[in-house]
Image 1 (cartoon, rainbow, N blue to C red):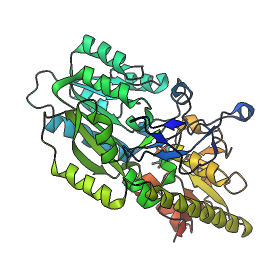
Image 2 (cartoon, rainbow, N blue to C red; image 1 turned 135 degrees about the horizontal axis):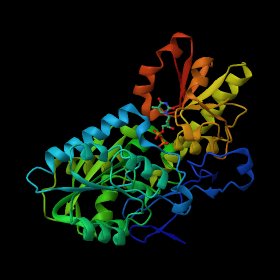
Image 3 (cartoon, rainbow, N blue to C red; image 1 turned 45 degrees about the vertical axis):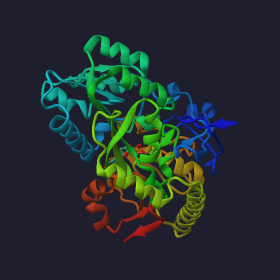
Amino acid sequence: MTTCRICATPIEAFMTFGRMPIANGFLLPEQFRDEYFFELAPAFCPCCGMLQIIDQPAPEMMFHGNYAFFSGTSRYMQAHFQRFAQQVMDTILPGRADPFVVELGSNDGIMLRNFAAKGIRHLGCEPSENVAAAARAQGVNTLCAFFGKATAEKIRAENGPADAILAANVMCHIPDIHSVAEGFKALLAPNGVVMFEDPYLGDMVTKTSYDQIYDEHVFVFSALSVQNAFARHGLELVNVEAQVTHGGSMRYTLAPTGSRPVSDAVHALLAAERAQGLDKAETFDRFRANCEKSKADLVALLTRLKAEGKRVVGYGATSKSTTVLNYTGIGPDLIEFISDTTPIKQGKFTPGAHIPVKPYEDFTKAYPDYALLFAWNHKAEIMEKEAGFKAAGGKWIHFVPEVGISE
Ligand code: TYD
């Protein structure tokens, strides 16, 4: 029997996406034979409201010395993290003597470089050595480690308590939230805060963006589930702020219980989540039905375009696309290649579906008839940049919030 990672209530999967490879496990043909697969099946805990996947591959299989994810590749994301850092500097750090900021999963230093530039004491905690090295090369102090109580105690012993602990698109990766929460308590100054943001469950349900569910995302949070998960560790949800990043995210602020007032935004979001049914299992039965429809519609559309002799390529070899491709069974017969600007992915093949990943120039040098926007979370940035594709008669295929062609 499977139990909830937060409250140990027995839970069951409400659907399965089938056999899935490692979402960021771009690979070469000689590696196809040994490719690792696991069953991707999400479950909803009716007791604490946490959406989680039943099985998750070992962390070392996902975050290692050759991790294919570099945050700094998007211009919009750089601006987003600059604003996040500025918010911390303006609202949390003033009045503190020699403040200290820690970030979990600091990747290539996209957020912390803003603190480094101002001479603010900072430390990133990043388990993948290749991205940690990229951060250090830019002057961002980085410890290559997974964050938990032991790491937190070591950081505090060497640097003192943290005024702000930050994480972006990281908390949802960590199965042992309790160990992380204990780490927060061990490291946080009494008047300090934890601020983290991740894809938001409310958006995922509204948009049927089932591609948010993949190996690295062991949880998809709501205000309700975050409140429940941290309350037991003496950390209170004191603020929430919606973000447009990653297709709809939420930034949560936690503080030692009773140390700060709970904002009106928290009360309003909790009420909105109840109204949306994010506290009820039936909501996820409807979500499953919507996923099935999305799958059938996408396969039908691509099959029709192929029959008409159209060229279709993918745009952005995202981690999310691994769920879409393996759930729908769409492969190189329907999508010629996927263009991506990340050098480490180019020349490789997508996990499971084995569609070639090619440099961006392969997209621009001979525009296809259709481009399937896998990086839909960067739509604004991409549409701005790709006016030429449209002018040449190219059309975009989207699948969030529903499958269709943008004229
Ligand atoms: P990302 O948004 O990080 O999604 P995920 O978390 O699902 O991996 O990935 C975006 C991918 O799209 C990344 O591999 C870079 C690529 N990309 C482009 O190829 N061109 C672009 O203009 C943008 C913004 C992203």
